[in-house]
Image 1 (cartoon, rainbow, N blue to C red):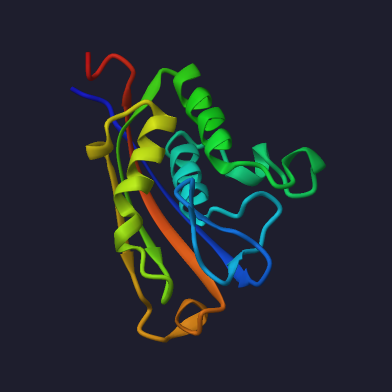
Image 2: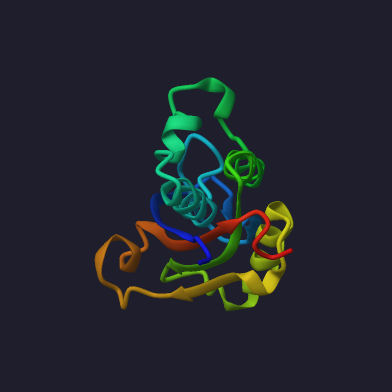
Length: 164
């Protein structure tokens, strides 16, 4: 019987002026960016939390605490590579990811393929193993009022030799 592990992740960050907007490792032109200790890439953070959760390894705050100055402004794709190493060290690999970003603006559809490519490259998997969707919150809640952007992710982990 094939053993699998599933984890889910969530993240939300406030939108503010004077910060870059980075989602899935991609800089997206917008008048507001996400506030956070690192680059505040909510999509990548949700994926990392899902990966860690699948193996009961805690969350990204355990490994990259916002109180630690070494992570200030950190590139979340580099953190994702470190999380990939943690799961590989335990004999697991990403089977697939399904994620959704919740934002009123900017429209993300034109950027989804590039986000998938960047995430897949960081994880050393194929882009068709990375699902990224975007939706609005129909002007409801903090995402709908354009106060922030949220992301949800589900990750399936398989044993390292499962795809060989």
